[in-house]
Length: 90
Image (cartoon, rainbow, N blue to C red; front, side, top):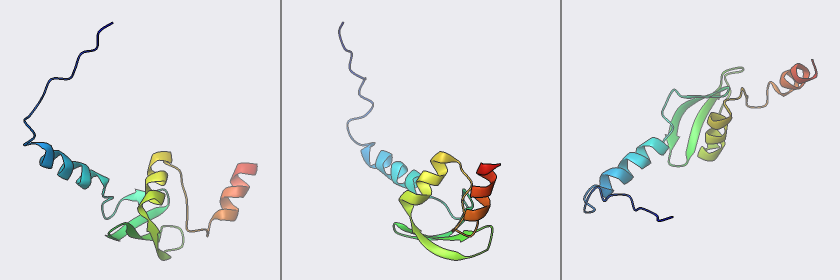
């Protein structure tokens, strides 16, 4: 079996455009709902979020929000921990 290479799409001139698009997509936008946390603003890798259950605001890392987006799971700042546990038992 022979492997075929992907055809070249540019001479390298599109590389900057591609990286800019990747960087833009990696930013979680203001107003995005990640589980039970709503993004208020971002400062680099830290995001100011608000819990939709108790309205508490705090900073969290981008990786934490990405995990919540991938899992598509309801969450909170910790205020609903007892509620989520009791729902699992039912």
